[in-house]
Image (tube, rainbow, N blue to C red):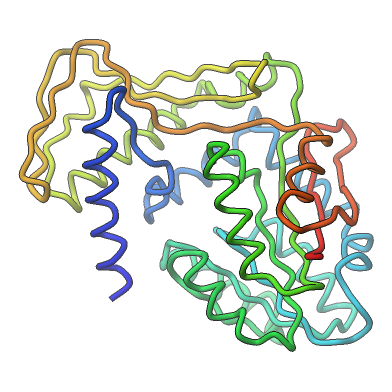
Length: 320
């Protein structure tokens, strides 16, 4: 039932985005099974510093993070939104298990395949860990967990995923996160920090072509799920960075005048030559802005965990 809701939403959002001027598509639909796999390739690139930075934070500061999130030996639910392969989180999970911490792990991901593979790997690596994976929309799943007010939630939203949101979407996300959190619940959110534009552009304008494949896979998904006829050879991928706003933006650009038919929408869309379709943003933050975001949504910053280069921060908040 939930898959049908998501497919219907994909159709609605695609219609709205391609009917707009300028055109856009929503980045949340990047992460089908193939998109999730390509994103793993992106994260494994040496130029993509975000993965190494957050891996360093979890590897070198896992005990500090443990002390900050745990309150005695009271049971808590470690809920991860957008868990993916759980590579970084496994560092913390192993540490918590080794210390005998009383907790359960609830990975939430839109990809059923990613969830299945994560659960299977955890069965082998941490057989005593209590795991209950949930597939689907983050807040649909978080809402069901919020009914258990007696169990503290520690919510993870890692990998700088929050940077993919517009300002309005960030406000909506954090407002809903606050709504589905009880007083004393904590959230650990990954933020990419502002730094040299050259370093940022190298990470997002990759020479390996993974970012291009990641964006084009969105069109492939629309072809498959909405009966469209996008020819991905007729689109180029382009990345820009604005150091004033701190936003990386990704576009698909039509390299010819063309029309695309989407059967599920019963509509034809026209693209001018060199017309750009906005695909994704990745915003970079500073510590002051992060603290303001927390306070504006009824959280307080408990502790910031940064890597040695101060490229990245995992910011721990507590619901007031």
